[in-house]
Image 1 (tube, rainbow, N blue to C red):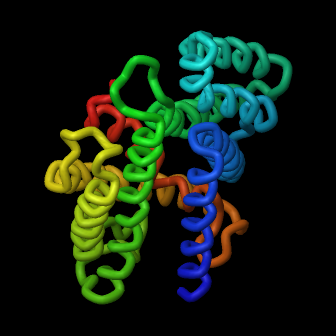
Image 2: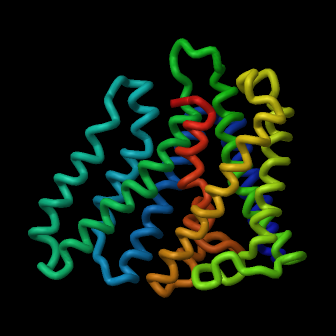
Length: 276
């Protein structure tokens, strides 16, 4: 637990430092880096299931897909062709690069990673990228992205602490035995409090409609989605018979263990906040 707390504090300091010193460009670069590292661990899990995803080329496409919303706004290059292009490329690759009985799994796992990880985390890039002519300032976009991350990740913290203190009823015993309904409720409540707090601290920069009360109400469904997103990673790890997606973060695991709750909350937050 001590390592987990220390790692969490260090990661939050690094995140705030990147946003403070490098603003939008730093945020986009950080999101893309996390997306690529998450995708690499996702492909490791897929390899554990017996699939043979195209890792190197998949990571290249993954980085481009996640960064595409920023590139589209900055340089006018459309984002939508990338996933179609990746599908064509990997459909060709399986004919020469995989044995016949592995081709479907290789194609499916490679493309699923691009959709589930790269495309969905790209919505964080959409949230943080300023749009010309909008009333929301670039720093407001940064705070909005930080709000989404805080609501999602503090759900994990609240669920963990509440589950340890009060957890009695398993929520998904066959998927993640340690998660409880009491922990889930605690996670949602903590997310609502954090959402309201960040909205209050960011007043003046965030949209006027995102009052602390509104922020708390929006945080509730995001927290639920964060829990589901975390369970999906557990499903993948169980299928691959791997306990942790990686070991780069002491006390936590891999990058996927950090980003798992953001994968589904990013697109949901984008639409709930009226940014679409």
